[in-house]
Image (cartoon, rainbow, N blue to C red; front, side, top):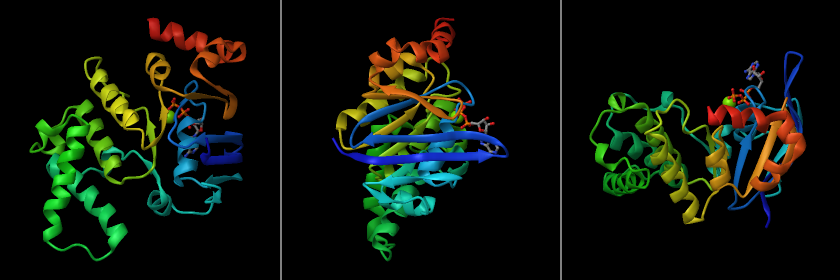
Length: 255
Ligand SMILES: Nc1ncnc2c1ncn2[C@@H]1O[C@H](COP(=O)(O)OP(=O)(O)OP(=O)(O)O)[C@@H](O)[C@H]1O
Ligand SMILES: [Mg+2]
Protein backbone atom coordinates (compact mmCIF):
# COMPACT_ATOMS: atom_id res chain seq x y z
CA UNK A 1 0.00 0.00 0.00
CA UNK A 2 1.44 3.34 -0.95
CA UNK A 3 1.13 6.59 0.94
CA UNK A 4 -1.10 9.22 -0.63
CA UNK A 5 -0.30 11.78 2.06
CA UNK A 6 2.75 11.82 4.24
CA UNK A 7 4.13 14.31 6.71
CA UNK A 8 7.62 14.82 8.05
CA UNK A 9 8.23 16.49 11.41
CA UNK A 10 5.11 18.57 10.85
CA UNK A 11 4.81 21.28 13.51
CA UNK A 12 2.98 24.52 14.12
CA UNK A 13 3.33 26.88 17.04
CA UNK A 14 0.71 29.40 18.12
CA UNK A 15 2.56 31.85 20.30
CA UNK A 16 4.77 29.55 22.31
CA UNK A 17 2.38 26.60 22.16
CA UNK A 18 3.06 23.71 19.77
CA UNK A 19 -0.43 22.73 18.61
CA UNK A 20 1.07 20.11 16.27
CA UNK A 21 4.47 18.84 17.29
CA UNK A 22 6.81 16.84 15.03
CA UNK A 23 4.16 14.65 13.45
CA UNK A 24 5.64 12.23 10.92
CA UNK A 25 3.13 9.84 9.45
CA UNK A 26 1.75 8.20 6.31
CA UNK A 27 -1.83 7.89 5.18
CA UNK A 28 -2.31 5.01 2.78
CA UNK A 29 -4.19 5.32 -0.45
CA UNK A 30 -7.87 4.25 -0.25
CA UNK A 31 -7.58 3.61 3.46
CA UNK A 32 -9.83 4.81 6.24
CA UNK A 33 -7.83 6.58 8.92
CA UNK A 34 -9.30 8.05 12.07
CA UNK A 35 -7.65 10.78 14.07
CA UNK A 36 -8.52 10.74 17.73
CA UNK A 37 -7.33 12.57 20.82
CA UNK A 38 -8.71 14.70 23.61
CA UNK A 39 -10.02 18.24 23.07
CA UNK A 40 -7.20 20.57 22.10
CA UNK A 41 -4.92 17.67 21.04
CA UNK A 42 -4.29 19.31 17.65
CA UNK A 43 -6.58 17.24 15.41
CA UNK A 44 -8.25 20.12 13.57
CA UNK A 45 -4.92 21.95 13.33
CA UNK A 46 -3.40 18.82 11.77
CA UNK A 47 -6.20 18.85 9.15
CA UNK A 48 -5.57 22.55 8.51
CA UNK A 49 -1.93 21.75 7.83
CA UNK A 50 -2.91 18.98 5.40
CA UNK A 51 -5.47 21.11 3.57
CA UNK A 52 -3.25 24.21 3.48
CA UNK A 53 -5.41 26.49 5.64
CA UNK A 54 -2.35 26.80 7.88
CA UNK A 55 1.34 26.82 7.07
CA UNK A 56 3.63 24.80 9.31
CA UNK A 57 6.30 26.39 11.46
CA UNK A 58 8.43 23.37 10.66
CA UNK A 59 8.19 20.18 8.61
CA UNK A 60 6.68 19.12 5.30
CA UNK A 61 3.53 17.70 3.73
CA UNK A 62 3.70 15.39 0.72
CA UNK A 63 0.97 14.28 -1.68
CA UNK A 64 1.92 11.16 -3.66
CA UNK A 65 5.53 11.85 -2.78
CA UNK A 66 5.45 15.43 -4.02
CA UNK A 67 6.23 18.22 -1.57
CA UNK A 68 3.09 20.38 -1.35
CA UNK A 69 4.04 22.30 1.80
CA UNK A 70 3.91 25.62 -0.06
CA UNK A 71 0.68 24.90 -1.98
CA UNK A 72 -2.50 26.91 -1.37
CA UNK A 73 -5.75 25.24 -0.21
CA UNK A 74 -7.24 25.73 -3.70
CA UNK A 75 -4.28 24.07 -5.28
CA UNK A 76 -4.43 21.16 -2.84
CA UNK A 77 -8.12 20.68 -3.49
CA UNK A 78 -7.40 20.68 -7.23
CA UNK A 79 -4.76 17.96 -6.93
CA UNK A 80 -6.89 15.84 -4.62
CA UNK A 81 -7.16 16.91 -0.99
CA UNK A 82 -10.64 18.04 -0.02
CA UNK A 83 -11.86 19.12 3.34
CA UNK A 84 -15.47 19.41 4.35
CA UNK A 85 -17.10 22.74 3.71
CA UNK A 86 -18.12 24.61 6.77
CA UNK A 87 -21.73 25.66 6.69
CA UNK A 88 -20.48 29.23 6.14
CA UNK A 89 -19.59 28.17 2.58
CA UNK A 90 -23.20 27.25 1.94
CA UNK A 91 -25.56 29.81 0.41
CA UNK A 92 -28.42 29.90 2.92
CA UNK A 93 -31.03 31.33 0.55
CA UNK A 94 -30.37 28.90 -2.27
CA UNK A 95 -31.91 25.47 -2.32
CA UNK A 96 -30.05 22.34 -1.35
CA UNK A 97 -29.90 21.29 -5.01
CA UNK A 98 -28.57 24.68 -6.12
CA UNK A 99 -25.83 24.62 -3.50
CA UNK A 100 -24.60 21.21 -4.61
CA UNK A 101 -24.94 22.15 -8.28
CA UNK A 102 -22.71 25.17 -7.70
CA UNK A 103 -20.11 22.96 -6.02
CA UNK A 104 -20.23 20.55 -8.98
CA UNK A 105 -19.94 23.50 -11.35
CA UNK A 106 -16.97 25.00 -9.52
CA UNK A 107 -15.15 21.67 -9.83
CA UNK A 108 -15.98 21.49 -13.56
CA UNK A 109 -14.61 25.00 -14.10
CA UNK A 110 -11.40 24.07 -12.39
CA UNK A 111 -11.10 21.22 -14.84
CA UNK A 112 -12.29 22.72 -18.09
CA UNK A 113 -12.12 26.47 -17.50
CA UNK A 114 -14.58 27.54 -20.20
CA UNK A 115 -17.40 25.10 -19.77
CA UNK A 116 -20.01 27.42 -18.34
CA UNK A 117 -22.24 26.78 -21.34
CA UNK A 118 -25.93 26.29 -20.63
CA UNK A 119 -26.04 22.74 -21.98
CA UNK A 120 -23.84 21.71 -19.09
CA UNK A 121 -26.36 22.99 -16.58
CA UNK A 122 -28.40 19.77 -16.70
CA UNK A 123 -25.33 17.63 -16.40
CA UNK A 124 -24.31 19.56 -13.31
CA UNK A 125 -27.79 19.28 -11.89
CA UNK A 126 -27.97 15.53 -12.52
CA UNK A 127 -24.61 15.07 -10.85
CA UNK A 128 -25.86 17.15 -7.91
CA UNK A 129 -28.97 14.96 -7.62
CA UNK A 130 -26.82 11.85 -7.62
CA UNK A 131 -24.71 13.26 -4.78
CA UNK A 132 -27.80 14.19 -2.80
CA UNK A 133 -28.92 10.56 -3.09
CA UNK A 134 -25.53 9.42 -1.82
CA UNK A 135 -25.87 11.53 1.31
CA UNK A 136 -29.57 10.65 1.72
CA UNK A 137 -30.71 14.23 1.31
CA UNK A 138 -32.52 13.94 -2.05
CA UNK A 139 -35.92 14.40 -0.50
CA UNK A 140 -34.84 17.87 0.62
CA UNK A 141 -33.47 19.09 -2.70
CA UNK A 142 -36.00 21.92 -2.98
CA UNK A 143 -35.56 23.18 0.60
CA UNK A 144 -33.63 26.34 1.23
CA UNK A 145 -30.33 25.52 2.92
CA UNK A 146 -31.21 27.89 5.75
CA UNK A 147 -34.20 25.75 6.67
CA UNK A 148 -32.32 22.47 7.10
CA UNK A 149 -31.93 20.78 10.47
CA UNK A 150 -28.38 20.62 11.81
CA UNK A 151 -27.81 17.02 10.71
CA UNK A 152 -29.14 17.79 7.25
CA UNK A 153 -26.71 20.71 6.94
CA UNK A 154 -23.83 18.34 7.70
CA UNK A 155 -25.10 16.02 4.95
CA UNK A 156 -25.18 18.99 2.58
CA UNK A 157 -21.58 19.81 3.49
CA UNK A 158 -20.57 16.22 2.72
CA UNK A 159 -22.38 16.32 -0.64
CA UNK A 160 -20.54 19.54 -1.50
CA UNK A 161 -17.25 17.97 -0.50
CA UNK A 162 -17.97 14.92 -2.67
CA UNK A 163 -18.77 17.26 -5.57
CA UNK A 164 -15.13 18.33 -5.60
CA UNK A 165 -14.21 14.74 -6.49
CA UNK A 166 -11.02 14.83 -4.48
CA UNK A 167 -9.31 11.54 -3.76
CA UNK A 168 -8.77 12.47 -0.15
CA UNK A 169 -11.67 13.44 2.09
CA UNK A 170 -10.87 15.13 5.37
CA UNK A 171 -13.92 14.93 7.64
CA UNK A 172 -13.73 16.90 10.87
CA UNK A 173 -16.32 15.60 13.34
CA UNK A 174 -19.16 15.23 10.83
CA UNK A 175 -21.54 14.25 13.62
CA UNK A 176 -20.66 17.13 15.96
CA UNK A 177 -23.67 18.83 17.45
CA UNK A 178 -26.08 16.27 16.06
CA UNK A 179 -28.94 14.74 17.92
CA UNK A 180 -28.70 11.00 18.57
CA UNK A 181 -31.33 10.27 15.92
CA UNK A 182 -29.31 12.09 13.25
CA UNK A 183 -26.05 10.19 13.79
CA UNK A 184 -26.96 6.84 12.13
CA UNK A 185 -27.78 8.54 8.81
CA UNK A 186 -24.37 10.24 8.69
CA UNK A 187 -22.69 6.99 9.65
CA UNK A 188 -24.53 5.30 6.80
CA UNK A 189 -23.33 8.00 4.39
CA UNK A 190 -19.70 7.64 5.47
CA UNK A 191 -19.96 3.84 5.24
CA UNK A 192 -21.39 4.11 1.73
CA UNK A 193 -18.48 6.33 0.65
CA UNK A 194 -16.03 3.90 2.22
CA UNK A 195 -17.66 0.89 0.58
CA UNK A 196 -17.34 2.47 -2.86
CA UNK A 197 -13.62 2.09 -2.21
CA UNK A 198 -12.36 4.90 -4.44
CA UNK A 199 -11.46 7.48 -1.78
CA UNK A 200 -8.98 7.94 0.99
CA UNK A 201 -10.90 9.02 4.06
CA UNK A 202 -9.48 10.72 7.12
CA UNK A 203 -11.96 11.20 9.92
CA UNK A 204 -11.71 13.14 13.16
CA UNK A 205 -14.25 11.71 15.60
CA UNK A 206 -14.92 11.37 19.28
CA UNK A 207 -17.40 8.51 18.93
CA UNK A 208 -15.40 5.35 19.61
CA UNK A 209 -17.98 2.95 18.18
CA UNK A 210 -17.79 4.77 14.85
CA UNK A 211 -13.99 4.63 14.89
CA UNK A 212 -13.86 0.93 15.70
CA UNK A 213 -16.43 0.18 13.05
CA UNK A 214 -14.85 2.11 10.17
CA UNK A 215 -11.11 2.50 10.61
CA UNK A 216 -8.24 0.64 9.02
CA UNK A 217 -5.86 2.75 11.07
CA UNK A 218 -6.17 5.05 14.03
CA UNK A 219 -3.83 7.94 14.79
CA UNK A 220 -3.80 9.12 18.38
CA UNK A 221 -2.80 12.74 18.89
CA UNK A 222 -1.99 14.01 22.36
CA UNK A 223 -0.63 17.48 23.13
CA UNK A 224 0.12 17.95 19.44
CA UNK A 225 2.23 14.79 19.25
CA UNK A 226 1.48 11.54 17.47
CA UNK A 227 1.26 9.32 20.53
CA UNK A 228 0.50 6.09 18.68
CA UNK A 229 -0.80 4.70 15.42
CA UNK A 230 -2.16 1.29 14.47
CA UNK A 231 -5.27 -0.78 13.97
CA UNK A 232 -8.27 0.15 16.12
CA UNK A 233 -7.73 -3.05 18.14
CA UNK A 234 -4.06 -2.23 18.71
CA UNK A 235 -4.95 1.26 19.86
CA UNK A 236 -7.58 -0.07 22.26
CA UNK A 237 -4.99 -2.40 23.81
CA UNK A 238 -2.14 0.13 23.81
CA UNK A 239 -1.41 1.03 27.43
CA UNK A 240 0.02 4.47 26.66
CA UNK A 241 -3.10 5.30 24.69
CA UNK A 242 -5.36 3.92 27.37
CA UNK A 243 -3.77 5.90 30.16
CA UNK A 244 -3.50 9.07 28.10
CA UNK A 245 -6.86 9.00 26.50
CA UNK A 246 -9.07 6.00 25.91
CA UNK A 247 -10.00 5.45 29.54
CA UNK A 248 -11.49 8.91 29.74
CA UNK A 249 -13.13 8.58 26.38
CA UNK A 250 -14.77 5.29 27.28
CA UNK A 251 -16.33 6.59 30.43
CA UNK A 252 -17.50 9.64 28.45
CA UNK A 253 -19.11 7.37 25.87
CA UNK A 254 -20.76 5.14 28.41
CA UNK A 255 -22.23 8.10 30.20
N1 LIG B 1 -5.66 29.77 15.10
C1 LIG B 1 -5.23 29.47 16.33
N2 LIG B 1 -4.58 30.39 17.08
C2 LIG B 1 -4.12 30.07 18.31
N3 LIG B 1 -4.26 28.87 18.90
C3 LIG B 1 -4.92 27.93 18.20
C4 LIG B 1 -5.44 28.16 16.89
N4 LIG B 1 -6.04 27.03 16.44
C5 LIG B 1 -5.90 26.12 17.42
N5 LIG B 1 -5.23 26.65 18.48
C6 LIG B 1 -4.84 25.92 19.70
O1 LIG B 1 -4.16 24.76 19.29
C7 LIG B 1 -4.52 23.65 20.10
C8 LIG B 1 -5.08 22.54 19.25
O2 LIG B 1 -6.36 22.93 18.79
P1 LIG B 1 -7.24 22.04 17.80
O3 LIG B 1 -8.43 22.85 17.46
O4 LIG B 1 -6.39 21.57 16.68
O5 LIG B 1 -7.62 20.83 18.73
P2 LIG B 1 -8.60 19.59 18.44
O6 LIG B 1 -7.83 18.36 18.72
O7 LIG B 1 -9.21 19.73 17.10
O8 LIG B 1 -9.69 19.79 19.58
P3 LIG B 1 -11.29 19.48 19.58
O9 LIG B 1 -11.44 17.99 19.85
O10 LIG B 1 -11.79 20.29 20.71
O11 LIG B 1 -11.85 19.91 18.26
C9 LIG B 1 -5.47 24.18 21.15
O12 LIG B 1 -4.73 24.48 22.30
C10 LIG B 1 -6.04 25.42 20.52
O13 LIG B 1 -6.42 26.36 21.48
MG1 LIG C 1 -11.18 20.00 16.40
